[in-house]
Structures are given as structure tokens and as C-alpha cells.
Image (cartoon, rainbow, N blue to C red; front, top):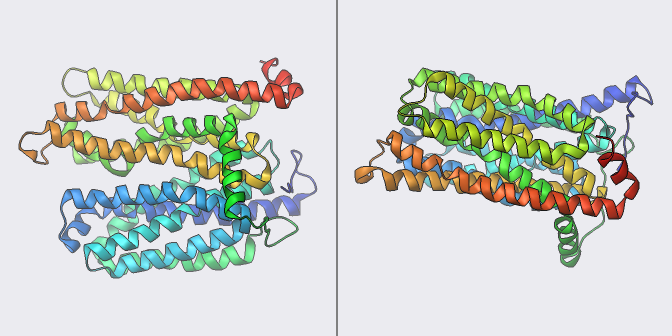
Length: 440
């Protein structure tokens, strides 16, 4: 892996500017992917009317998108290791743009589902590529903070999707709104082709050609390392609560489960996104100065998220608004905390398999989110009399309690693999182990 900029900014401002130029363009592609991923959240009623579908069918869009995204992570990681971030990012942006254009013209539920599958595929090709470029173009000391900034700024896509798409759907209609959104990809594709390079010295960086056996060995080596598994379980444990609230169940929970108005529910979800954005750079700085305590930080955050949920769920009657604000702020911190897992992958794997290790880790939170999305729906139906959609406070209390199953599993695995990862570091690099463990 080539690093163009050291901690002092050498070898000079032009190369530093080039590094940031590559990052900005790649970041905009990721932001656009988040925009496309989130655009359906404000188009639910319009989609129900256009395709004549039920609430359960509408929820299928979200579940399918999460499944495709998670399932693509390892293949995308292998593709990045083989063909480079630039080629895969270009492919992902092209697929995303065409899929969103197809969604604009979809006139049946089946066609719309197929379009969203390809939106998920294109989306899945963006984040790993941006992480690879960050690791290539910036010095190791800068990487954790740059990754957090990437995640934080990328989340602006969800906010940007809300107001413009709501306005567009009301004034332009379905087809024109999604066509305008997809056209943004054409502009970014041109910028990507002009600005982004895999390394300072090469436009395209190609890895070794891998046979099926070599792929299995590479993935096995990544998964065998306890640092990769620790990163996976960190990602698994921290992300799902915020993801599920933001993508599907937050609004119904606040309105029907806690008796909030539509406006208050919207404000709460916005506060959660702001919390995500504010926490990211702080966590990036923290793990840079205290790398030995990355897993301890995650354990504390997961415990805090579970703790505030416990207070809300045990509160007699509807929780007061101030407590719900505390809930979304604390839960929001879990989003950027999940990216600490990628830093474990970075320091536990050689450059040749960094993207595939990142793909393994990136599956964790999305599989947990998928399980939680389905579980909440099933439990709500089970606890709601007559199978109606008029969910009660009690039904949501039961449904949201399923999170404790995932937290318990994740916390046990984090504790287990952090011990193994530290033991592995002591064996592989005694000097580094001594320096890190003895310095704090």
C-alpha cells in the first residue's frame, strides 16, 4: 500500500491537495449512494400509492436492500483487492445511476423490487472503495479520523434526501424526481474518471489474479485473524439500533409506541443523525491517541446504548420527550462507533487483503440490522390484537426488547476476541504490544 502524505504533510502541499481531491470526489460518490439508499424513506406513501402495495410489502424494500448490501460486502472486497478501488467505484456508481433511473420508470411492484436490488448492489460498491482510497492516500496516523469524517459526511446524504425529495415528489412527481436524482450520478462519474487514482503513481492498481482456492485461502486468513473477528463483532454490536430506527422502525416507534406527534418524531430522527455526525470525529481522534483501548471504548458505548434503552422501555407509560432526546443522542453514537471495527481490520491485515477484511467486518452491523428489522415486525404482529397495524406501546416494548439478544451476543464475542487479538499481537509483534499496552 502506498502512502502519499506523512504526518507532517510531506512531500508537499500539491500532493496533500491531490490526496484530499481524491477523497472529496470519492466521498461525494458515497454521499450520493446514501442519498439513493435513503430516498425511499420519504417516498413511502407515494410508493404505496404508485404500486398499490401494503405496509409489509413496503418494508420488503428495506429488508431486501439490507440483505443485498450485506451479502455484497465480501465479493466487493475481493474485487477491490483484485481490480482496485477506482474501477470498482466506477462500476458501483454506474450501476447505482442506472438502477435509480430504472426505479423512476418502474410501474409495478416486481420491477421496483428489481431496481432496488441493483440500487443495493451499487451502494455496496462505494464505502469499501472509499476506505481503500483513504488507507492508500493518507498516513496511518490520519486514517482513523479520515474514516470517521467519511462516515459522518456520508450521513448527510440521508438528510439531503429528506427535504429535496419530499419537495420534488410533491412538485415534479415520481418519475421526474427519481430521474433528477439519478442524473447526479452522471456528473460525479465524470469527476471520478478525471480525479480519482488508485495510488499517487498509478491510475489503476491491479492485485494478483485469484483462483477460487486462493480466494478461499485469502478470506480464511482474514477471518482467522482475531483482530478481524473483533472488528466484525464491534460492527455487529454498535450499528443496528441506530440503523433500524433510521431506516424503518424509528418513526412508528415514536408516534405509535411513545405517543409523539409526526413533527416530534421527525425532529428526534434528525437529532439522531446530528449525533452521528458530531460523535464521529471525536471517536476518530480518541482511537488515534488510545488505540489499545478501542475495544474498551466500544464496550462502553454498547453498554450505554443498552442502558438508555432499558430506561425508556421500563418507563411507566410514554417516555418524556427529553428522555427520547437522550435516547437518540446515545443511540446515534453507535453509528460512528461501528467504524472502529474497520480500524481493527486495518491494523490486523496486510494491504493485499485489506478490502476483503473490511468487507467481512462491514457485514456485521447490516446482518444484525436485518435480523432486528424482521424480528421487530414479527413481534409487533404477534403482540397486536387482530393482526392490525395499530401497534401499541406494549407491543413496541416487547419488539424493541429483542435488541438485548443481539447486544448479549455481541458483548460476549467482543470480550472473547479482544483477549485473542491482544494475545496474537503479543506473539506477532512483542515490541508493539509492549509499547501500546504499557503506555496507558
